[in-house]
Image (cartoon, rainbow, N blue to C red; front, side):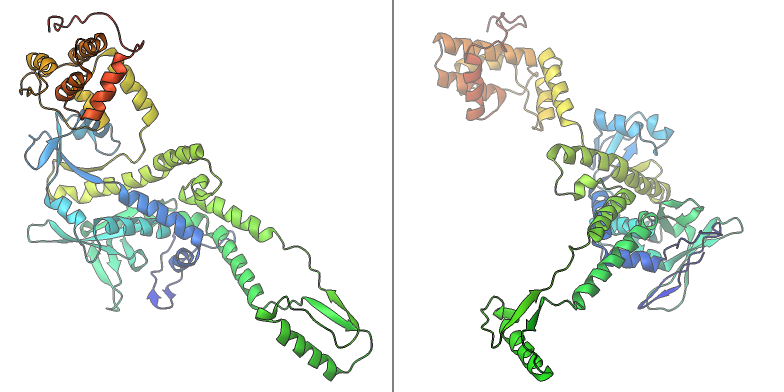
Length: 493
């Protein structure tokens, strides 16, 4: 069933569905109709904007395998390396790589971030997401330099692009209809990146928009909105009727009606009426407003949210904080992550090989980490003494400290002005032992509290307020601090 070919003020490509022969009376929405719903339906716009913006916010990073880190790169940490090696689209070459390095400065990163025909990096990905949500697909045109490397990316309006097919419906190229030229331009398949939700009836070149599945529900809501607007514009409903006791002429009735309207219309509402003649005013009574449109509105919200993969709790004002957190995690895992994977796969298939075979792009994981679980795991590791001081600071998001020697830590206990030399690292058990001895000395009165606070601040390279909390906390009786003597070599300090 073919879509409409033209819309007022624009050109719309007719896309055939060769495998659909009978729609059982259900309409297949055209690109023009899908665009109209996006422009005029607030729920559709909200869902499209949420998905497109969420995908565009996920950072894309450039990596290379088995390459020594340079000033323009850094070695990927253990957690990132494990995530990339288990990535579903990066293949065996990444899983078998000895090392993975993130590249921080590269022409490919500049291409994806700089202005491309008026669209910056975020806008480029955002408009890609919008086209995918509304039309089911988006197209990038790559413009190469003399070396064959892309220097410009142009987002083609999806409604102006048509895939060229062979006899087996395989895509061999594309045709593009610019807005001002008035004729088709043929594009090579290698120069066009197509990001699509594949259509079940045409997986090789067809596209299936989320809006397409819920189009009838969206159209029903639009019809009810038009009905309500027409009802308000043409409201032929009276507020009441005055019935005079004595018979009056038509002219007298028109005169009385005119006087009433002049006195009580607009700002005159609520004034007192002194009738010139006896009669009875009968207020008009209407049945309560039909709740059908409200139910249709709620059902439309639910079904459109499901079609776009947006949890209903995110669009509801009555959701609790716990429901919002669970919904955000579900939204990131089931909706945003699959769209990010589509973007990654196409870029690694057709764009990154033009800059180097060892390069690949990978986005950060959009699924939020379980902070409560990570905190519990970190606390257990710290309590067991399996983490060094630097690892603990890294988990907390702090920068690394200069190395401190055991002998200098001893000097810091007696000389607050002593400067820690850059020698061997002081492990966590040593740090705990020194803190314990300082606090015992303060508690026993052998060391002034101010000197102890200065020593802790100098030892751990922390501010005075934080050091004061450590000394104050440790000097109070507490079951959280072990009372046995240290056995890590600091007992003679």
